[in-house]
Length: 105
Figure 1 (cartoon, rainbow, N blue to C red):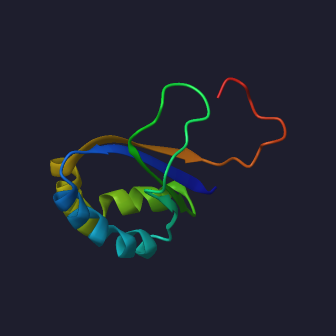
Figure 2: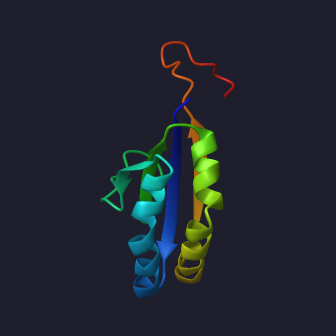
Figure 3: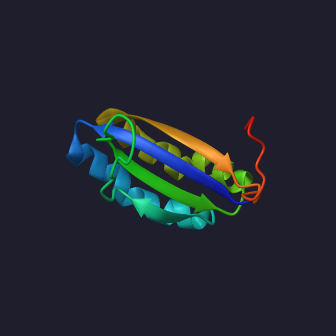
């Protein structure tokens, strides 16, 4: 099943954060992932205005996401992200059921 990663972050040190973003594309690609959006402008349609950075990635499976997150090169790159921002990273697998989804999920 395809897996999506949605990351949001508030960046307080752009120069240090760039050291993270410079390193991530080849690591994501190595694990079969691709960026669907990467820091593009976000428009809030409903609710509290969203002002953070958002990145959405697609991977062939959750196993690919797990391998990416554990990759030593990615772990090393994350030190720059941790130093420069606060945020959240969530993963959702696509079950492909958009016609009749379980409302409890």
